[in-house]
Amino acid sequence: MDFPQLYGRRNEEPWIKLESIEFRRHRDGLIAKIDGCDDRTEASTFSNLELGVQRDLMPPLEDGEFYWVDLIGLDVVNTEDTTLGKISNVIETDASPILDVKAEDTHYLIPFVKPVLDSVELTSHVRVKWDKDWLA
Image (cartoon, rainbow, N blue to C red; front, side, top):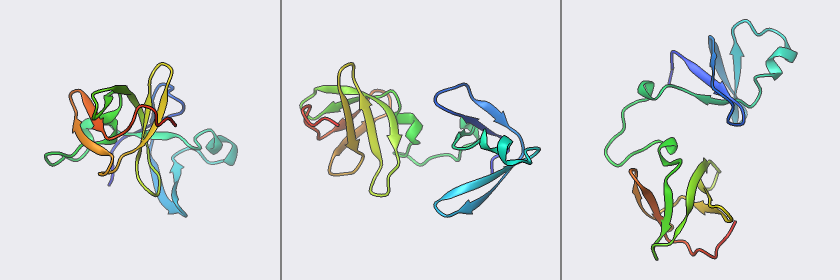
């Protein structure tokens, strides 16, 4: 997929516009060549950036589909109607995506898989089959 404009950030810092980037696959990741960035020292400042694109440039979704970013900030409620916290991140792993759920004094890492997932209501919450005592 080719996007006309990419943005990058690190650790929740403000997004910065990235100019003219070419990507190529390398092992399990990507290597990017940023136009005008020609030495290793300067290139290292761009290492491990979170990349983003404007939402309106993303492909349309089918009914029932969503992007991970749509889950961020939703409440997580278990099947006993106990609110476990809010989704702060979705972590990609080889086995399955993981919901990173945080509350004031609690932290959960919940597999985002069918046996655990009960339902997703994008306007309010994700319902999971997860006991409140199963902490990260």
